[in-house]
Length: 253
Image (cartoon, rainbow, N blue to C red; front, side, top):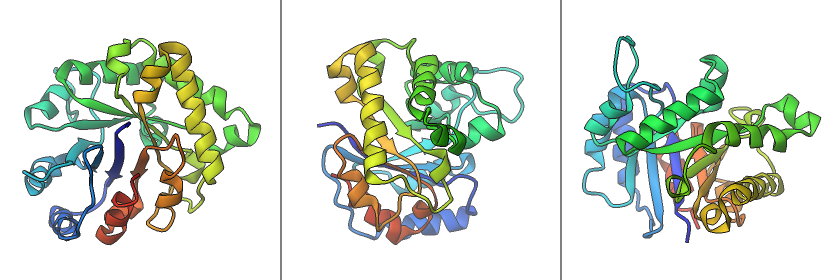
């Protein structure tokens, strides 16, 4: 069975003290994680080490950085490299989030480079893709997402893509309170898997975890995750409330 993942994206929120309290509250709640399920915490860079220490020794809990630079080292003041993240035992890196694409003008080519440096360092990318509202309204969302996949991922080998993680985020549903219907989520997830299958074959495509990222909440996670091609979620606001994110984790199939 494909890995089922509940990934928290804290974005630029919380002080260290608030972050530690949130993790303490979450860890105190019984989490029903099986061997094929994992909860991943995408925390701000300054909190990676202290939050990782909070989950030390706890199975099926992992840490993610929210970004990395596309170079391994050099005169890039303020940036953080994949080898740096690996040196503190970070497991995952969120790449290509819609906010990074929009506010920081990250291109498909840059994201391909970031994926490469992550693989070189032994980090697992969580690659985000998804369409804005105007693309959805124009009915061209499938072509839009296909281009994101092809331009940033299709240089990878089948071996590299085996067990890869993709997060589909309909941008029009992030932080707006709108959520794609279960049918819309399943349709796009199935399409993404079919695009991958056409390039790499069914076995590779069926090994890839595709997460839904668009206003996932405690009261809708179970229905969304029940869709056959939805393998969990990339969760923003609801991941900042311990009881809500615990309920989302426990909604994994």
